[in-house]
Amino acid sequence: MILEQAVLDVRPGRADDFEDAFSRAKTIVSAVPGFQRLTLSRCLERPDRYLLLVQWDTLEDHTEGFRGSAQYQEWKRLLHHFYDPFPTVEHYREVTTA
Image: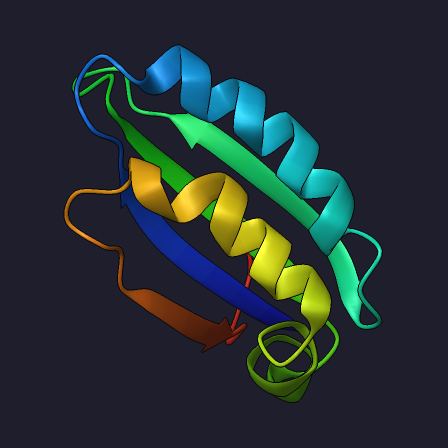
């Protein structure tokens, strides 16, 4: 399992619109092969900041499968205009748990 992590800084005053758009966008990504689950959390200290965590079967399911798909174009159309600055996306492999 691969964990994708992105901190999403949403333009001030656009949080409600972003959450509405994300509710539509999550149905797009959840239909992609290799997708396992996602969580979107809102920061308590900085209410225009969100943490997106997405679990994928493999790195390529995200970087090649999803990002190379027509579905990704719709994801971009729905969400990318909300971000300032544009987020950095990183991928992690679990090492240990407690």
